[in-house]
Image 1 (cartoon, helix red, strand yellow):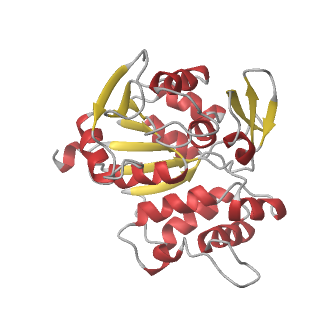
Image 2 (image 1 turned 30 degrees about the vertical axis):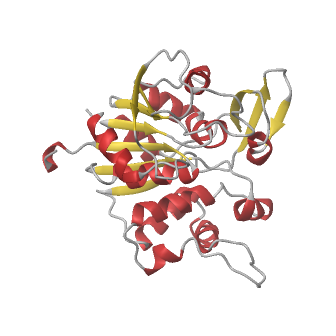
Length: 294
């Protein structure tokens, strides 16, 4: 692929799965934009959110680390967790984002500033939160039970639908502009309800995703999770996305991993995981995603 034909790619989701996608996409994209879920309420992120009125910083910080590779000293230190101090267990990057929110007054501006501090080039790669205001992830199970909070939802079997609260949470203009200009949108991998859909169900993001001109590729998880997707095959993952108004043009799956089921979309099977088979390999993933581009 010549430099003039390299695509503009948006990676959508959260957590370690989205970080793997970012590392893959950077191999072939002219510009990579990560649109990241901000509804997490566990760990260091949850502790900060309990005392500060801010969106979840953890997934954003993790994605900035991935985007900044090969890392300089600050980027390499973002994931450092303090031990034996008053801030024990907190990641440095989470604390930096919390401090930048306090100084700028806006989470989106804080993320932009951290991207600049680690040396990202806005013309090559950037990280954008799915919403710049605090949201709570809420779920309804197939039996009608209501569950609140990302951690609680991740442990629950039988999730039917998730949404963010407040429902009218705003998405940054940069996220919507990136989707409007994308030649390819890579959705996932990652926890289906608590990472992927936590980003995609923000109303403006979902609408921009529907209108995106680029090919939408859903990277399915390697295995079902013990909680939120227990017993799911590939078709169940795709059906859950569709219930939430998220359509995929192509579904990319690891050959021989999850049972496929009856998927109402184009399915591409390939070897895209690390040797241990538990996580996606960015280099392998890059080769296949490049072949699925515009």
